[in-house]
Length: 369
Image (cartoon, rainbow, N blue to C red; front, side, top):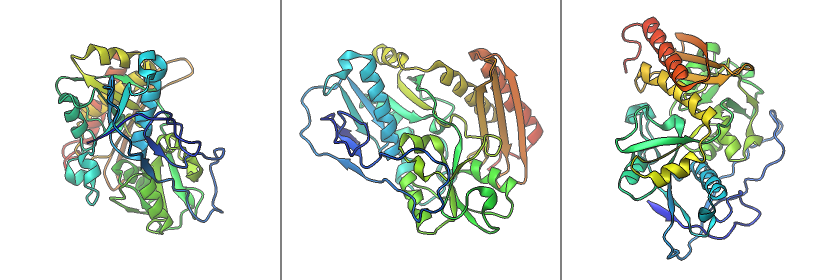
């Protein structure tokens, strides 16, 4: 793992990661627009420049563990900035340190996630670093976090959720419906693949379309695929929404469980870190994520089962939950929904109940690898 000390504020050409030693170059963007088919190439802001500076002798008060992708670093710096704003002692130079940890999911890019274990591929090594005392808190994309947590860890904090929808990106078509028959859409997500093929049977899917956002956009530029689907939340956090051609509605593409949510874990016996994280927790997001994860846990789907779930609140403040399971080829899609009070126990019950219904409707063998 690589410890990244805090340093001066980056120049104006970098993302607003003030006092961080990792800068994601060239992330400033024009106003958001949803369709730009006249552009010949997608904008791919790639580089991570790591400044090699003398390690500060001061011991950091909080060491944040994260993956090293541009998106993971953006999430870690969002966490850092919120901690600095909430606690004056953490605003001091050197008080917070970013520690980059390479996970199994980052190391193995040539195989589909389902073939190398699925659950925990992007969290295992970070969890180990947390338990070993190498870091104090761990920042995760919640959709990567298994429904079980390692012993002696807790996840007491979710930051405010970003937009949960998926973005359609193409150089040649304004939407999925406008793609010509036989067009290839790249995605590593079985959830996206199954819902796409269910509605657009004439399209083809290139599986194992893996890599970070920049890698996938490069492959699109190179003509490997005619379109791809990415989480809008990630594009927003990277300030890369100018690449978005159109945004898929929730009805067209139900999101992954906990999509757009950031979770922060610490050791269960570390009251100091738990208190820091409690000050950042966004309760509306935490409850929605708990509902969706209860649904996923009840289904206990295999690594090859497309599952989607989304909890939101309506104008009256009630929880509206929508859940879905599908066959990987999209020929069979089962959906359900629930409505109830926006309260933890009620929402967990709704998620479990929805999961039990779809288990019953799916029948034996549906969730087998």
